[in-house]
Amino acid sequence: MYSNVVKLIKKSLGGTNKYGDPVYTESEREVFAQIKSISQKEYYEANTSGFKPELKVVLADYYDYDGEDTIEYDGVRYDIYRTYRSNISIELTCQRSISKS
Figure 1: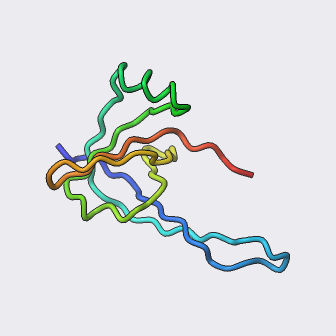
Figure 2: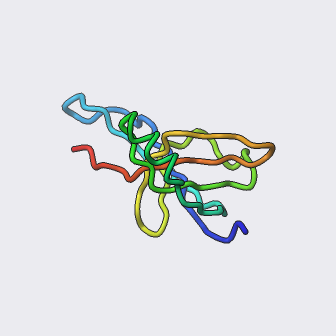
């Protein structure tokens, strides 16, 4: 059931560079998860709010989630934009990350 491995990625401010720009560091950790698809109804409802959900990730224990904002699955990064806790598990709804330059 929870046979997929995903990386939870947390970004934190690591200081500033010589120009005063913020420098972020990333910490990654792997957890087991169940991958689900987005329903048609959920996709269109989210789309009206400007979101494009592509992936739903369920972690067996909500303690595995520590406020991370990015997830990596099969080499693709996704932004977590919604969490839903159900009993002890937690569901993360994600959309593909857009590189910010």
